[in-house]
Image (cartoon, rainbow, N blue to C red; front, side, top):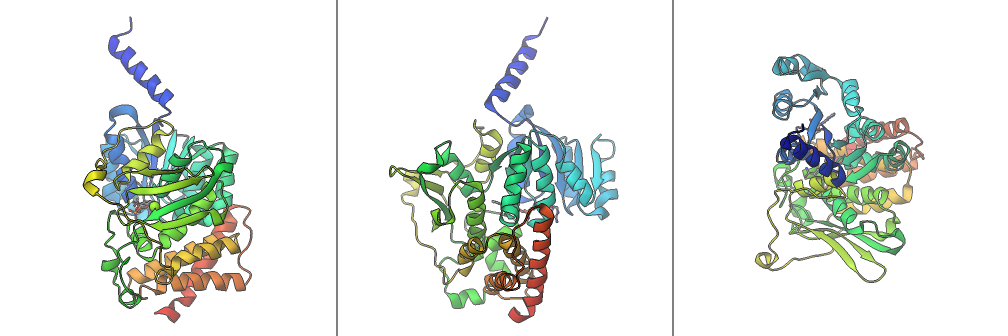
Length: 409
Ligand code: NAD
Ligand code: MG
């Protein structure tokens, strides 16, 4: 005879299936800001989720700790030097250990319900593509994948019959706001942004901004790279390109509004004059929860929104003169093809150079724009047909940007 507890757990499992909750999950970039937020959220849901693979690039100790805590089946460290230490730390646990770029791709290729793609930068391209081919659902935090490989990545998702859910808070907001509305009724999609730590700084002050000052994001604690992108507003530029690939609109239907409180994460204007927005206190666990549970919902611990206590929300137009990175989205749309890959690669090189104090803050956007124009002039922007074309453009973008570094230092 079945015990009541078994019937209960069967009922719970069935309910989960019906809710559409992804049960078995892998997290690529598990030690990062989005990765750890994802695991924190999952841990709050008892045995509703199982962790399959966790990956990280260099931090072996953090990866091993997460793998043990969440009883993962596989832990992969991208840097091969970390292998012996990872194996030693996982000894006796039954958790498989692996290392190196090929192992990262194998980890991403395991057939799970959902892969959280949270590697930072173009380094996430190959693993995220592998996930698109193998997973039922890809929860996408790695926006650089869409910026660099947009059309090719969307085709990979479509060909595999996978489901793509945005994790980026603005895109999650837009996805939730559209929720099944016929695209022909969408007039405009607006992404909001905090304006970053230099929202009120003059161009002269920004010219002397240090990496420490750029690291002070007003509302979020995030990885190093996206924090700098938020200070230049390159993050909004990348997000416009991300939105272009995710949603069924033209580039001229996309806009950015600065909203320092980051309560309204994005909104959609419809043909009947309705504007639907998604709100919440700034906490990545909310959009992560939406990406895991969609179309159902799951509990997440973000501080509850108290509009009365907040009193007012403010909005302003972004200043493209002080934040020229924003305008690079338009140029990328005009050029099309691999322009996004070149822009993203050049930005990654420029951000690293700024963090290494080789170039001043305003040089990040200038260098990225310069690399983009140089690539266009030299006929290096082409229509990509596969991931290898994108990776070739990424490498060209990096080489162009490195060649330009001295001019900006
Ligand atoms: P992070 O720097 O905190 O973490 C990055 C993760 O990727 C780490 O686990 C790291 O080990 C791994 N990684 C780094 N380099 C790698 C490489 N070469 N190969 C394989 N793995 C590598 O970054 P994050 O802030 O969590 O951001 C992750 C992604 O999510 C980025 O694309 C970012 O734009 C996007 N995103 C982040 C936030 C946020 O709040 N942090 C919000 C929206 C979108
Ligand atoms: Mg965002």
